[in-house]
Image 1: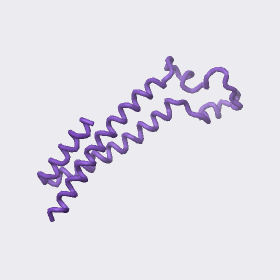
Image 2: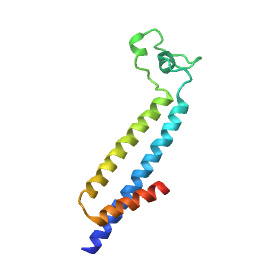
Image 3: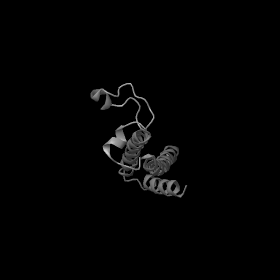
Image 4: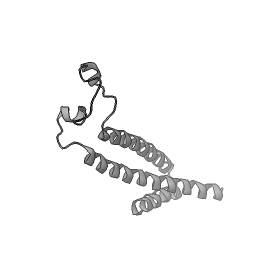
Length: 119
């Protein structure tokens, strides 16, 4: 039906816009993650707490391997991973819709991608 086709094209358009938004969000999160990294990328700088923090597990090597509080850059990496999963899922959904070989669906994906990038 024509109403179903219009709704399908709008859904694909919105999925394409969301795909571009997630892609840009991932880039912003990457920039923040890079700023949160310590200046020294040695293993000690990544795993040791900042100076002045007292850690009850100071003498135990087994507890030092898995710190209880993760550094800030780790949470940015977790966020980037989640953004990546959402981006891949959205990308495959749009690709699957385009592979229906319907010209209107294809145009909806193109217009949605264009609008999402423009925003």
